[in-house]
Length: 134
View 1 (cartoon, rainbow, N blue to C red):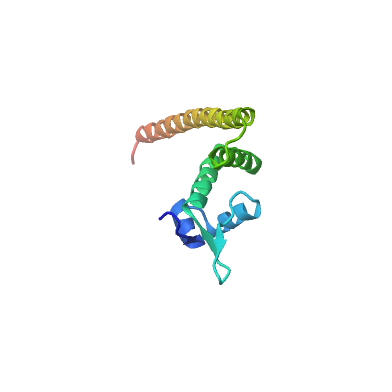
View 2: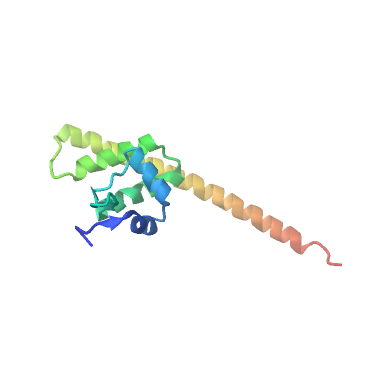
């Protein structure tokens, strides 16, 4: 599908984001459609979908829109055809590493929360099995 454009509805389906959310991310400058149709419809590419997926994955980990923007900017500059100067490249790589560490820490916190929630649910199930029936 490279080089082909998708309308916002298809992008919403593929990313599992609402149209409203995608439009909001456009308004905040996180993801811009690559083109517009003659009728003014937003048109997106695979690269746009990939950006939206980064945002979608960061959101439940508690990252802010500014943090999302910073990471996307860093990865854009690293992935662009222009090679950044070595010092700039090091700064960009450290930025990406920092977000990777923060994401891993948040995943660990979420695993702990999930384990506690599962323990709680199991405790309630066990308690219900001990209640005498009439």
